[in-house]
Length: 225
Image (cartoon, rainbow, N blue to C red):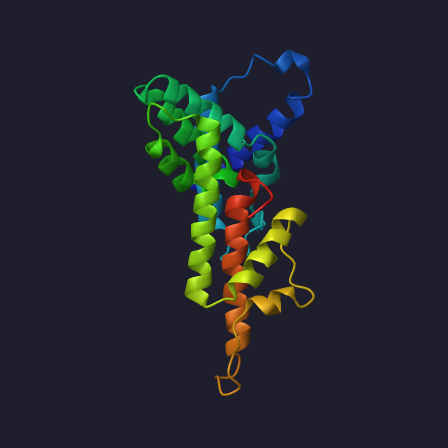
């Protein structure tokens, strides 16, 4: 049943992609926005379930199963849309639970927001009657970003100044680079008596944590750390 859904919804995505080029299609969609978000969410869940561990961009799971992830990404919702919903929810004195349902569905249906869901929901919980959503969001995200980076530095015993400098460059450039000596400066000294491969494992672990951190915050915060 899962594979049947993947094939069928993939076909729907391809058809929608073609029809979206025609004005006649606009406003005549069969699926409601909520239905689309539900199906997107399930499709992404199945993608995560079927793909092989460590091959995050793999779209062809086997000869029989292809995921149309690029088509999913084309209709992704951004953080601005979510914040507009948050404003509406806040304006209604945080009473309209339907808006909260919409927020959850929109996040689950968007690959780029799933790793930020806890941040968004915690932010909503932090709002009070006097909050100005846009300002509160920027302050909240800057605080959370510092907290999480400081936690990585603490966990891995990294050089704080070099780590901040390294991530600052990543946020300015829009990507993490490991060429040159900048990343090496982030890492703590490893004793020459350490087991073979220890530095390589440390490097890989730290890089993974910093990459996840970057992916979590890059699209929802300003360029400065």
